[in-house]
Amino acid sequence: MIIRFRKLGFVITMSVITLSVSAQKNEPVKVIKSAKEPKIDVFIGGKLFTSFLYPDSLEKPVLFPLHAANGAVVTRGFPLDPKPGDPTDHPHHIGLWFNFENLNGLDFWNNSYAIPQSKKNLYGWIRTDRILETTGGTTGILTYHANWTNQQKDVILEETTRFEFSGKGNQRTIDRVTTLKANTDAAFNDAKDGMLGLRLAHELQMPTTEDQKFTDDKGNVTIVKGGTDKVASGNYLTSAGKTGNDAWSTRGIWCKVYGKMGTDSVSIAIIDHPANPNYPTFWHARGYGLFAANPLGEKIFTNGKSAKNLHLKKGESITFRYCVVINNGKQTISPNQLNELAEEFAKK
Image (cartoon, rainbow, N blue to C red):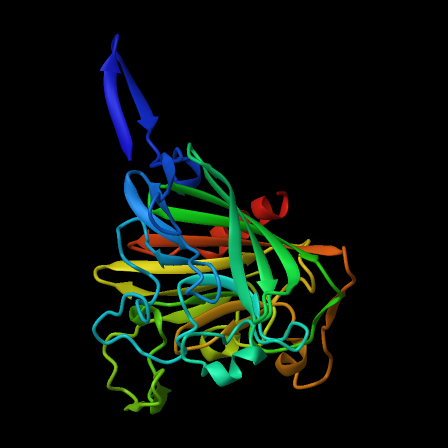
C-alpha cells in the first residue's frame, strides 16, 4: 500500500508493508494444569489451542483436540468427542501422539480400548507419571515424564518430552522434543506404524473416487461410496514435491496437509529435524486421515530394499525433534515459508 502526504511543500511517499507472520509478535500463552483430572489446557491469545490428556484410561498421552487460530478443530473428534460424520476406524488415532508399533515385540501404536483383554499382553502402554514444568509467556512450556511399559508395568523406556507452544496471527506452532532412555535393552524393529502421528479432521481427508471400507471398534463395517464424501477436501505436499497419495512412503524434510474448513484454507505441516534418526523422515501420510512421520519404517516404505532397526542398550538414550505448524487464512503456508521454518527449526 502506498501513502502520500504533504509536509513543508514536499510530497513524501511511504510504502507501508503488511507484516508477515514472521514479523508479528507472539501472542501470550497460558499453560494451566487441572486440579481435578489428568489434563493440562494450553491457551494462545486467550483461546483454547489444545489440551494434554494423560489419564491411565488412555494407552498413551495425547494432545487433543488441536485448533487453528480461527478456532477450527483440525483433529478428528472420534473416539473422545465424536462429531457427526466422523469416521470411526482406527480408535487408537487420537489427536497428536508419539509411539511405535514394535518395541521389544510389543505394539504401542495400535493399543486402544478396542483390543480384547485376552490380547492386551501383546501391546504396550505409555503412562505419564510426572509433570515436570508448566510455564506460560510468549512461549508456553509443558514438560512431562512417562514410562513405556508392558502389561505388567515393567518399564522398557523412560520418556521425557518438552513441548513449546507459540502463536502469532493465523499461525500456531508446537515444537516437540522427546528423549527416550532405555531402562533395559530396547529394540525398535522396523515397522510401518510410527512415530509422530496425527489424525486429521474429516475436512482434511483426501476426497476419493474409490469405495472406502471402515470398521469401528465393535466390528461394524461401513462402506463409503467413492465420490459421495462432500466434506473431505484435503491434499498432501512434501518438500520433495510429492502430492496426494504419492506422498506416502517417500522422504521429505517437511510434509503439509491442506484443505478447506468453512471459508478458510487450513494447513498442518510437520517438519523433521536433521538430528533425528534416519533424516529426512519417511511420510506415513494416508488419504483417509492418518498423517505421520516415521523414520523407522524403511523396510515397508522401500518394499524391502532396506530396513532401519534401532537398538538401545540399557542406559542409552535417543532424542526425536519435530515441529508442527498449523495455519489458516485465504491461502495455506507456502513451500518457501516452510523451507524457512525448517531452516530455523534445524538450528534449535
